[in-house]
Length: 129
Figure 1 (cartoon, rainbow, N blue to C red):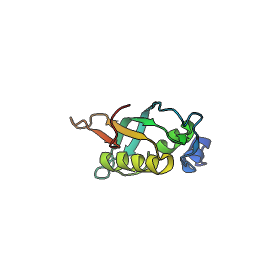
Figure 2: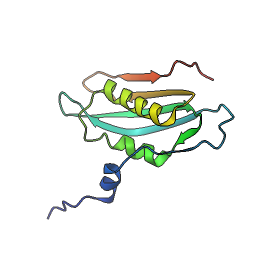
Figure 3: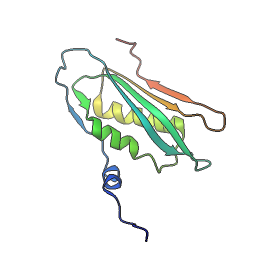
Figure 4: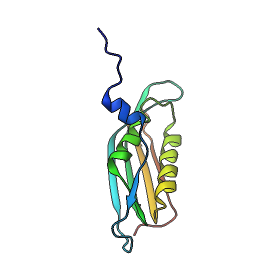
């Protein structure tokens, strides 16, 4: 017998929204690095799964991202047909809109598929601190 009920993880992913918190030290420049090595989405052309490690690096201003919310937000792409370029830019845009950081870089490092590997890097104009 197959259980078609939605599991608690699927419910959490379905409700995923980026949440931000107050920066406890907005007077100071400091860098936050977050690695999310289990990203998946679907190729918009073939439907095959794509796997990637996403890295988010930023210098916060007034807000910081809540980590579990970020994880669930990235997990929400698992059943979406979207290109490497589009998903990396979408994540960057959403983080920029929510955080308004002093600096932000988002890197999608996609696993090779069909002998092709891509790394998409989107960052604000500011150089490293």
